[in-house]
Amino acid sequence: MTVAHECATFDATAFTQWCDRELYTPAIRQGTQILDLACDIHLMSLYRQLAFTQLLAAPRTARQLSDGLGFETSSHIALDAMLSRLAAQTGIVSVEPGPPARFQARAQPPDGKAELAELAALRRAMTELGPGYAAALEFLNFGCENFVTALRDEPSMMDRVLSGADAEHYQLWHRATNADPMQDLHGRMGAMAVAELFSGGTVLELGGGTGNGIRHLLEVFQARRMLDCIDRFLFTDVSPRFILDTRRAMREAFPSVPCEWKYLDMNKAFRGQGVEQESVDLVYGVNAAHIAKDIVAMLRECHAALRPGGRVAFAERVRKCPGEMVPRELTLNLSRYHRTAAQRDAEIRTAHGYLTPRCWLVALQRAGFQEAAIHPDLVVMDQVFPEHYAAVVTGVRGCD
Ligand SMILES: C[S@@+](CC[C@H](N)C(=O)[O-])C[C@H]1O[C@@H](n2cnc3c(N)ncnc32)[C@H](O)[C@@H]1O
Image 1 (cartoon, rainbow, N blue to C red):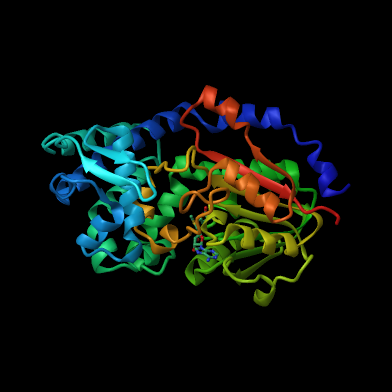
Image 2 (image 1 turned 180 degrees about the vertical axis):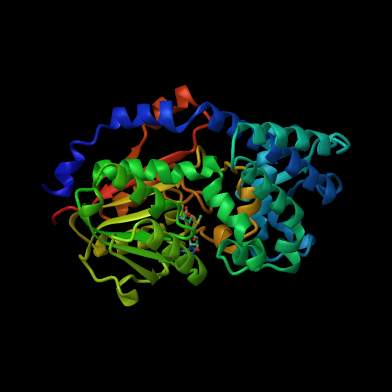
């Protein structure tokens, strides 16, 4: 059976229902709301600390603000996101759309006296949701505390944290990608989709990092007695520490799965990095594909690496609208690699980092993929859980 034929058996409606009923649990839904509230409190606190009421007495662009504060070159992307979110969520600042957008202070932010108590209450509510939930708040807190350091004094700081090169904060990032159930669900969603879409062969995982993707995929395959259909699992990342640690964990948990562990930079040609053309059947990624600076070029590399009939499946956080800043980006936007994954294009890349669902579909088509699709059905999800944020983006290499 070809991979494309297998796709026809994928029950998209059942997958959407599974996401609604089983993946987005009541705890996940509550946690998502708590995280949004905490993010806005932190952003207002930063707004106050950076004296934006005074700095934005007259309209200014994020770049003007960033330069005035002595922040490093691409920091305006973080400030733009922060101020756009505050403009949408609060009345303290307004935005005159651009490009470039101009921001102006409109009202005093809260004085901050109640902030600590509010954050403590949110932390308690989050902790009560279950193990791991507090990791999301811990990650936000870290971003807030290091905002100026990362944008001005030590611009490579957050890249080191996100790539495992900062031993002190290694666990913080590990918890933020694996222990936090709201984040872990990307790997669960991806694995569930792949178990339906994949008919066997070689898997290439991009940006596999701390292992959320491979762990869920192998767990689901094991539960369905499908492990044998993996001929070869090629796990890749740019962080040697992540590769070594994930290798150790997977060798222990799944000793029989034929895995290979490789450094692969998705911003460079795959072939020069040991992945031959037409050598894999599935290119997989969990919250990794959006890191590519040039999405279409990366997708073309995937297309070339796939055998005819092979497929890409990326479990991704998606932006509902181009200017949306998601809570986690308070911290992620402090990383240069997240900010500079930003080759703008009106159709495929309207913002840095995460893409909108529509951008993914256009990018897949431009890279030559067929059957470009997004699961679950996001129109249905908008109705049943408007705060939904995860999707699996997929496309097939035709038998050209
Ligand atoms: C958000 S993390 C996701 C990690 C993993 N998939 C998970 O969910 O546990 C993104 C990963 O992309 C990796 N990464 C960053 N830049 C990359 C690049 N240019 N090529 C390949 N991987 C990259 C990082 O090291 C990190 O492990």
